[in-house]
Image (tube, rainbow, N blue to C red; front, side):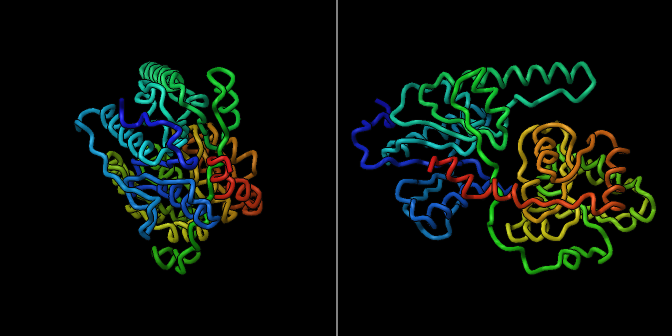
Length: 392
Protein backbone atom coordinates (compact mmCIF):
# COMPACT_ATOMS: atom_id res chain seq x y z
CA UNK A 1 0.00 0.00 0.00
CA UNK A 2 1.43 3.47 -0.91
CA UNK A 3 2.68 5.48 2.10
CA UNK A 4 -0.01 8.15 1.69
CA UNK A 5 -2.89 5.67 2.15
CA UNK A 6 -3.16 5.88 5.93
CA UNK A 7 -6.39 5.39 7.75
CA UNK A 8 -8.48 8.46 8.39
CA UNK A 9 -9.16 6.98 11.84
CA UNK A 10 -5.59 7.88 12.84
CA UNK A 11 -6.31 11.59 12.67
CA UNK A 12 -6.19 13.43 15.94
CA UNK A 13 -7.46 16.67 14.45
CA UNK A 14 -8.50 17.98 11.07
CA UNK A 15 -5.17 19.27 9.76
CA UNK A 16 -4.79 21.17 6.50
CA UNK A 17 -1.51 21.13 4.56
CA UNK A 18 -0.89 24.34 2.58
CA UNK A 19 1.64 23.86 -0.22
CA UNK A 20 3.74 25.83 -2.69
CA UNK A 21 6.92 24.14 -3.92
CA UNK A 22 7.55 26.49 -6.84
CA UNK A 23 8.09 29.91 -5.27
CA UNK A 24 10.84 31.96 -6.91
CA UNK A 25 12.09 35.36 -5.84
CA UNK A 26 11.27 37.11 -9.11
CA UNK A 27 7.72 37.98 -8.09
CA UNK A 28 5.60 38.44 -5.01
CA UNK A 29 3.91 35.03 -5.03
CA UNK A 30 5.65 34.19 -1.77
CA UNK A 31 3.37 36.77 -0.16
CA UNK A 32 0.41 34.42 -0.45
CA UNK A 33 2.01 31.85 1.85
CA UNK A 34 3.55 34.42 4.21
CA UNK A 35 0.31 36.30 4.69
CA UNK A 36 -1.71 33.15 5.35
CA UNK A 37 0.83 32.07 7.97
CA UNK A 38 0.94 35.49 9.66
CA UNK A 39 -2.86 35.77 9.66
CA UNK A 40 -3.30 32.35 11.28
CA UNK A 41 -0.58 33.09 13.82
CA UNK A 42 -2.14 36.44 14.68
CA UNK A 43 -5.55 34.82 15.23
CA UNK A 44 -4.21 31.75 17.09
CA UNK A 45 -5.41 29.34 14.40
CA UNK A 46 -2.10 27.70 13.44
CA UNK A 47 -2.87 24.51 15.38
CA UNK A 48 -4.88 23.11 12.44
CA UNK A 49 -2.54 24.14 9.63
CA UNK A 50 0.89 23.11 8.34
CA UNK A 51 2.93 24.63 5.52
CA UNK A 52 5.18 23.04 2.92
CA UNK A 53 7.29 25.24 0.64
CA UNK A 54 10.57 25.30 -1.26
CA UNK A 55 11.86 28.49 0.41
CA UNK A 56 11.42 29.86 3.94
CA UNK A 57 8.12 31.58 4.65
CA UNK A 58 8.72 32.14 8.37
CA UNK A 59 11.88 33.72 9.79
CA UNK A 60 11.65 31.88 13.10
CA UNK A 61 11.99 28.12 13.43
CA UNK A 62 8.50 26.68 13.52
CA UNK A 63 7.29 23.09 13.70
CA UNK A 64 4.41 23.93 11.35
CA UNK A 65 6.65 24.94 8.43
CA UNK A 66 8.78 22.61 6.30
CA UNK A 67 11.01 23.53 3.40
CA UNK A 68 11.92 21.17 0.59
CA UNK A 69 13.99 21.32 -2.56
CA UNK A 70 12.24 18.76 -4.72
CA UNK A 71 14.41 17.26 -7.45
CA UNK A 72 12.80 15.59 -10.44
CA UNK A 73 13.90 12.20 -11.73
CA UNK A 74 14.95 13.98 -14.90
CA UNK A 75 15.72 17.56 -15.90
CA UNK A 76 14.03 16.99 -19.25
CA UNK A 77 10.50 16.18 -18.13
CA UNK A 78 8.22 18.78 -16.58
CA UNK A 79 5.64 16.03 -16.09
CA UNK A 80 8.11 14.03 -13.98
CA UNK A 81 9.05 17.11 -11.96
CA UNK A 82 5.50 17.81 -10.83
CA UNK A 83 4.71 14.14 -10.30
CA UNK A 84 7.72 13.96 -7.96
CA UNK A 85 6.53 17.06 -6.13
CA UNK A 86 3.07 15.58 -5.73
CA UNK A 87 4.58 12.41 -4.25
CA UNK A 88 6.43 14.54 -1.66
CA UNK A 89 3.22 16.42 -0.87
CA UNK A 90 1.20 13.24 -0.40
CA UNK A 91 3.90 11.71 1.81
CA UNK A 92 3.93 14.76 4.10
CA UNK A 93 0.12 14.85 4.18
CA UNK A 94 0.09 11.22 5.29
CA UNK A 95 2.70 11.85 7.99
CA UNK A 96 0.55 14.53 9.62
CA UNK A 97 -2.76 12.77 8.91
CA UNK A 98 -4.01 15.72 6.90
CA UNK A 99 -7.69 16.07 6.09
CA UNK A 100 -7.06 18.47 3.20
CA UNK A 101 -4.25 19.65 0.93
CA UNK A 102 -4.42 23.16 -0.48
CA UNK A 103 -2.22 23.66 -3.54
CA UNK A 104 -1.38 27.34 -3.89
CA UNK A 105 -0.86 26.74 -7.61
CA UNK A 106 -3.09 23.97 -8.90
CA UNK A 107 -2.23 24.55 -12.56
CA UNK A 108 1.07 22.65 -12.60
CA UNK A 109 -0.41 19.48 -11.06
CA UNK A 110 -3.43 19.02 -13.30
CA UNK A 111 -2.01 16.15 -15.34
CA UNK A 112 -0.48 14.38 -12.32
CA UNK A 113 -3.68 14.69 -10.30
CA UNK A 114 -5.64 13.06 -13.12
CA UNK A 115 -3.66 9.88 -12.53
CA UNK A 116 -4.28 9.58 -8.79
CA UNK A 117 -6.53 7.02 -7.14
CA UNK A 118 -8.72 7.60 -4.09
CA UNK A 119 -6.71 9.28 -1.33
CA UNK A 120 -7.40 9.76 2.39
CA UNK A 121 -7.52 13.54 2.05
CA UNK A 122 -9.31 16.19 0.02
CA UNK A 123 -7.44 18.30 -2.53
CA UNK A 124 -8.16 21.97 -3.18
CA UNK A 125 -6.18 24.66 -4.94
CA UNK A 126 -5.94 28.00 -6.71
CA UNK A 127 -6.24 27.88 -10.51
CA UNK A 128 -4.32 30.89 -11.82
CA UNK A 129 -4.80 30.45 -15.55
CA UNK A 130 -8.41 29.56 -16.37
CA UNK A 131 -9.26 29.68 -20.08
CA UNK A 132 -12.86 30.91 -20.07
CA UNK A 133 -11.97 34.56 -20.80
CA UNK A 134 -9.20 33.87 -23.28
CA UNK A 135 -9.80 35.29 -26.72
CA UNK A 136 -7.78 35.52 -29.90
CA UNK A 137 -6.21 38.96 -30.31
CA UNK A 138 -3.98 38.44 -33.34
CA UNK A 139 -4.57 38.21 -37.09
CA UNK A 140 -2.32 35.45 -38.46
CA UNK A 141 -3.84 32.06 -39.26
CA UNK A 142 -0.92 30.26 -37.61
CA UNK A 143 -1.45 32.21 -34.38
CA UNK A 144 -5.18 31.44 -34.48
CA UNK A 145 -4.42 27.73 -34.87
CA UNK A 146 -1.98 27.78 -31.93
CA UNK A 147 -4.52 29.67 -29.82
CA UNK A 148 -7.24 27.07 -30.51
CA UNK A 149 -4.79 24.23 -29.87
CA UNK A 150 -3.74 25.74 -26.53
CA UNK A 151 -7.34 26.26 -25.44
CA UNK A 152 -8.24 22.68 -26.38
CA UNK A 153 -5.28 21.45 -24.33
CA UNK A 154 -6.42 23.48 -21.32
CA UNK A 155 -9.95 22.04 -21.56
CA UNK A 156 -8.52 18.53 -21.70
CA UNK A 157 -6.30 19.16 -18.66
CA UNK A 158 -9.26 20.49 -16.69
CA UNK A 159 -11.38 17.47 -17.55
CA UNK A 160 -8.45 15.27 -16.53
CA UNK A 161 -8.03 16.79 -13.08
CA UNK A 162 -11.79 16.76 -12.47
CA UNK A 163 -11.76 12.96 -12.81
CA UNK A 164 -9.95 12.81 -9.48
CA UNK A 165 -12.64 12.11 -6.85
CA UNK A 166 -10.55 13.82 -4.16
CA UNK A 167 -10.91 17.26 -5.78
CA UNK A 168 -12.92 19.36 -3.34
CA UNK A 169 -12.60 23.06 -4.19
CA UNK A 170 -10.95 24.92 -7.08
CA UNK A 171 -10.53 28.65 -6.56
CA UNK A 172 -10.43 31.31 -9.26
CA UNK A 173 -9.13 34.77 -8.38
CA UNK A 174 -11.53 37.71 -8.72
CA UNK A 175 -13.73 36.15 -11.39
CA UNK A 176 -17.29 35.14 -10.53
CA UNK A 177 -18.24 34.83 -14.22
CA UNK A 178 -15.62 32.14 -14.75
CA UNK A 179 -16.68 30.38 -11.55
CA UNK A 180 -20.28 30.27 -12.77
CA UNK A 181 -19.25 29.04 -16.23
CA UNK A 182 -17.14 26.14 -14.94
CA UNK A 183 -19.70 25.09 -12.33
CA UNK A 184 -22.37 24.98 -15.02
CA UNK A 185 -20.36 23.32 -17.78
CA UNK A 186 -17.91 21.06 -15.93
CA UNK A 187 -18.32 20.23 -12.22
CA UNK A 188 -19.71 22.18 -9.28
CA UNK A 189 -16.43 22.57 -7.38
CA UNK A 190 -15.36 26.09 -8.40
CA UNK A 191 -15.27 29.03 -5.99
CA UNK A 192 -14.57 32.75 -6.13
CA UNK A 193 -11.45 33.91 -4.27
CA UNK A 194 -10.54 37.60 -3.81
CA UNK A 195 -7.09 38.35 -5.20
CA UNK A 196 -5.45 39.70 -2.03
CA UNK A 197 -4.04 43.16 -1.44
CA UNK A 198 -1.61 42.49 1.38
CA UNK A 199 -0.64 44.89 4.13
CA UNK A 200 2.83 43.39 4.10
CA UNK A 201 4.62 46.46 5.40
CA UNK A 202 4.67 50.23 5.36
CA UNK A 203 6.35 52.00 2.45
CA UNK A 204 10.06 52.55 2.82
CA UNK A 205 11.01 55.92 4.22
CA UNK A 206 12.44 56.99 0.89
CA UNK A 207 11.62 59.50 -1.79
CA UNK A 208 11.53 57.45 -4.98
CA UNK A 209 12.34 60.51 -7.12
CA UNK A 210 15.52 61.04 -5.15
CA UNK A 211 16.26 57.30 -5.06
CA UNK A 212 15.93 56.86 -8.83
CA UNK A 213 17.16 60.30 -9.89
CA UNK A 214 13.80 61.48 -11.23
CA UNK A 215 13.24 65.24 -11.66
CA UNK A 216 10.88 66.57 -9.01
CA UNK A 217 8.44 67.97 -11.60
CA UNK A 218 8.11 64.72 -13.57
CA UNK A 219 5.10 62.43 -13.60
CA UNK A 220 6.06 58.85 -12.74
CA UNK A 221 4.50 56.06 -14.81
CA UNK A 222 5.12 52.67 -13.19
CA UNK A 223 5.36 49.21 -14.76
CA UNK A 224 5.84 46.68 -11.98
CA UNK A 225 6.53 42.95 -11.93
CA UNK A 226 8.43 40.49 -14.09
CA UNK A 227 9.44 42.40 -17.21
CA UNK A 228 8.69 39.88 -19.91
CA UNK A 229 7.16 40.15 -23.38
CA UNK A 230 3.63 40.18 -21.92
CA UNK A 231 4.27 43.59 -20.38
CA UNK A 232 4.03 45.22 -23.84
CA UNK A 233 6.96 47.49 -23.06
CA UNK A 234 7.99 48.19 -26.67
CA UNK A 235 4.57 49.65 -27.55
CA UNK A 236 4.48 51.63 -24.32
CA UNK A 237 7.89 53.16 -25.05
CA UNK A 238 6.71 54.04 -28.56
CA UNK A 239 3.65 55.75 -27.08
CA UNK A 240 5.81 57.88 -24.77
CA UNK A 241 8.10 58.69 -27.67
CA UNK A 242 5.12 60.16 -29.55
CA UNK A 243 3.96 62.43 -26.74
CA UNK A 244 4.07 66.20 -27.33
CA UNK A 245 7.39 67.77 -26.36
CA UNK A 246 6.26 69.17 -23.00
CA UNK A 247 4.54 66.01 -21.79
CA UNK A 248 7.43 63.85 -22.99
CA UNK A 249 10.06 65.90 -21.20
CA UNK A 250 8.10 65.79 -17.96
CA UNK A 251 7.50 62.04 -17.95
CA UNK A 252 9.44 59.18 -16.38
CA UNK A 253 8.73 55.58 -17.34
CA UNK A 254 9.85 53.55 -14.32
CA UNK A 255 10.05 49.76 -14.73
CA UNK A 256 10.81 47.65 -11.66
CA UNK A 257 11.12 43.87 -11.73
CA UNK A 258 13.30 41.08 -13.05
CA UNK A 259 13.82 41.33 -16.80
CA UNK A 260 13.26 37.97 -18.46
CA UNK A 261 16.22 36.65 -20.45
CA UNK A 262 14.15 36.52 -23.63
CA UNK A 263 13.18 40.18 -23.25
CA UNK A 264 16.54 41.81 -22.40
CA UNK A 265 17.80 42.40 -25.92
CA UNK A 266 14.41 43.55 -27.20
CA UNK A 267 14.06 45.96 -24.28
CA UNK A 268 17.54 47.41 -24.73
CA UNK A 269 16.93 47.97 -28.43
CA UNK A 270 13.59 49.67 -27.79
CA UNK A 271 15.23 52.13 -25.40
CA UNK A 272 18.38 52.91 -27.38
CA UNK A 273 16.50 53.45 -30.66
CA UNK A 274 14.52 56.36 -29.22
CA UNK A 275 15.91 59.75 -30.11
CA UNK A 276 13.39 61.89 -28.28
CA UNK A 277 13.94 63.01 -24.72
CA UNK A 278 12.02 61.22 -22.01
CA UNK A 279 13.38 59.40 -19.01
CA UNK A 280 13.31 55.60 -18.90
CA UNK A 281 14.52 53.78 -15.78
CA UNK A 282 14.78 50.01 -15.35
CA UNK A 283 15.54 48.30 -12.04
CA UNK A 284 16.24 44.73 -13.03
CA UNK A 285 15.70 42.99 -9.69
CA UNK A 286 13.14 41.66 -7.28
CA UNK A 287 12.45 44.36 -4.67
CA UNK A 288 11.33 43.88 -1.09
CA UNK A 289 7.72 44.48 -0.10
CA UNK A 290 8.41 47.79 1.63
CA UNK A 291 10.08 49.16 -1.50
CA UNK A 292 7.19 47.93 -3.63
CA UNK A 293 4.78 49.78 -1.36
CA UNK A 294 6.80 52.99 -1.77
CA UNK A 295 6.70 52.66 -5.55
CA UNK A 296 2.91 52.41 -5.67
CA UNK A 297 2.49 55.08 -3.02
CA UNK A 298 4.56 57.66 -4.89
CA UNK A 299 3.97 56.90 -8.59
CA UNK A 300 1.33 58.84 -10.51
CA UNK A 301 -0.10 56.29 -12.97
CA UNK A 302 0.21 52.50 -12.93
CA UNK A 303 0.53 50.84 -16.35
CA UNK A 304 -0.86 47.32 -16.75
CA UNK A 305 -0.94 47.12 -20.54
CA UNK A 306 -0.27 43.38 -20.83
CA UNK A 307 -0.89 41.54 -24.09
CA UNK A 308 -2.68 38.18 -24.26
CA UNK A 309 -3.38 38.30 -20.54
CA UNK A 310 -6.93 37.64 -19.39
CA UNK A 311 -6.78 36.64 -15.71
CA UNK A 312 -6.54 38.58 -12.45
CA UNK A 313 -3.68 40.91 -11.53
CA UNK A 314 -2.53 42.05 -8.12
CA UNK A 315 -1.08 45.20 -9.66
CA UNK A 316 -4.42 46.99 -9.95
CA UNK A 317 -5.10 46.06 -6.33
CA UNK A 318 -1.85 47.64 -5.18
CA UNK A 319 -2.71 50.74 -7.19
CA UNK A 320 -6.16 50.90 -5.60
CA UNK A 321 -4.63 50.59 -2.14
CA UNK A 322 -2.86 53.92 -2.68
CA UNK A 323 -5.66 55.49 -4.74
CA UNK A 324 -3.51 55.56 -7.86
CA UNK A 325 -5.26 55.13 -11.22
CA UNK A 326 -4.37 52.33 -13.62
CA UNK A 327 -4.21 52.25 -17.40
CA UNK A 328 -4.94 48.67 -18.48
CA UNK A 329 -5.47 46.64 -21.64
CA UNK A 330 -8.95 46.78 -23.12
CA UNK A 331 -9.84 43.11 -22.65
CA UNK A 332 -9.93 40.40 -20.03
CA UNK A 333 -10.76 40.40 -16.35
CA UNK A 334 -8.41 43.27 -15.51
CA UNK A 335 -10.31 45.68 -17.74
CA UNK A 336 -13.65 44.52 -16.35
CA UNK A 337 -12.52 45.08 -12.76
CA UNK A 338 -10.85 48.40 -13.53
CA UNK A 339 -13.93 49.88 -15.20
CA UNK A 340 -16.48 48.34 -12.83
CA UNK A 341 -14.72 49.69 -9.74
CA UNK A 342 -13.68 52.97 -11.44
CA UNK A 343 -9.99 52.32 -10.85
CA UNK A 344 -8.82 53.86 -14.12
CA UNK A 345 -9.19 53.47 -17.88
CA UNK A 346 -8.31 51.04 -20.66
CA UNK A 347 -6.72 51.17 -24.09
CA UNK A 348 -5.86 48.76 -26.89
CA UNK A 349 -2.34 47.53 -25.97
CA UNK A 350 -1.49 47.13 -29.67
CA UNK A 351 -2.60 50.65 -30.60
CA UNK A 352 0.29 53.02 -29.86
CA UNK A 353 -1.75 56.13 -30.71
CA UNK A 354 -4.52 55.09 -28.33
CA UNK A 355 -2.02 54.55 -25.49
CA UNK A 356 -0.44 57.94 -26.23
CA UNK A 357 -3.82 59.67 -26.16
CA UNK A 358 -4.63 58.15 -22.77
CA UNK A 359 -1.27 59.35 -21.40
CA UNK A 360 -2.00 62.87 -22.68
CA UNK A 361 -5.50 62.77 -21.19
CA UNK A 362 -4.07 61.73 -17.82
CA UNK A 363 -1.64 64.66 -17.87
CA UNK A 364 -4.21 67.25 -19.00
CA UNK A 365 -7.22 66.06 -16.98
CA UNK A 366 -5.96 64.83 -13.59
CA UNK A 367 -9.35 65.27 -11.91
CA UNK A 368 -10.89 62.82 -14.40
CA UNK A 369 -8.36 60.16 -13.34
CA UNK A 370 -8.79 60.48 -9.59
CA UNK A 371 -9.97 57.23 -7.99
CA UNK A 372 -11.16 55.95 -4.63
CA UNK A 373 -9.87 52.42 -4.11
CA UNK A 374 -11.12 52.07 -0.51
CA UNK A 375 -13.96 49.67 -1.21
CA UNK A 376 -11.96 47.52 -3.62
CA UNK A 377 -9.11 47.28 -1.12
CA UNK A 378 -11.44 46.23 1.69
CA UNK A 379 -13.08 43.54 -0.46
CA UNK A 380 -9.63 42.12 -1.28
CA UNK A 381 -8.04 42.19 2.14
CA UNK A 382 -5.86 39.47 3.66
CA UNK A 383 -8.80 38.59 5.89
CA UNK A 384 -11.13 38.11 2.92
CA UNK A 385 -8.55 36.02 1.07
CA UNK A 386 -7.53 33.73 3.95
CA UNK A 387 -10.99 33.16 5.36
CA UNK A 388 -12.40 32.31 1.92
CA UNK A 389 -9.54 29.99 1.03
CA UNK A 390 -9.55 28.16 4.37
CA UNK A 391 -13.32 28.32 4.84
CA UNK A 392 -12.96 29.99 8.24
